[in-house]
Image 1 (cartoon, one colour):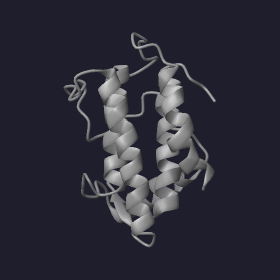
Image 2 (cartoon, rainbow, N blue to C red; image 1 turned 90 degrees about the horizontal axis):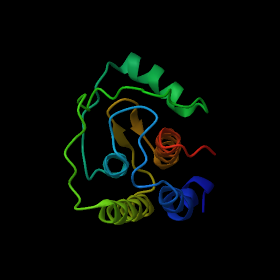
Image 3 (cartoon, rainbow, N blue to C red; image 1 turned 120 degrees about the vertical axis):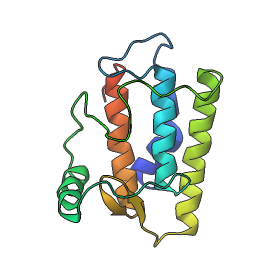
Image 4 (cartoon, one colour; image 1 turned 120 degrees about the horizontal axis):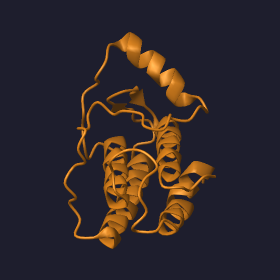
Length: 153
């Protein structure tokens, strides 16, 4: 099993549990639960539960993808043009339910890719990605949000 896949199955939920429910983020407007729901949706895009069109030209997308595939982290406060300035309404009744939803989404993501290993799934900012590319992006994205809530690895 790839290390990044194992991270999502084993490590990520435990790291989220280390964050105090009342911890304010170091940047941004998302609460802990809002961030977890945001990550759930990001993973949903990675296995086509949520489908979003490419947002930029092929040229800009190619440059963005080169950054995405690098080891350079997202900068604190990086804007997502698909998100409003105000946080989205929470959909889960509480933090525990949001964490359960995230874990289920991770399982759905992994199962989708086991059944469709040669698939490419569009990311609205980085274009068509294969499984390894999605794992890399989601890993980078997870680290970005863990750092946002004071967890640095």
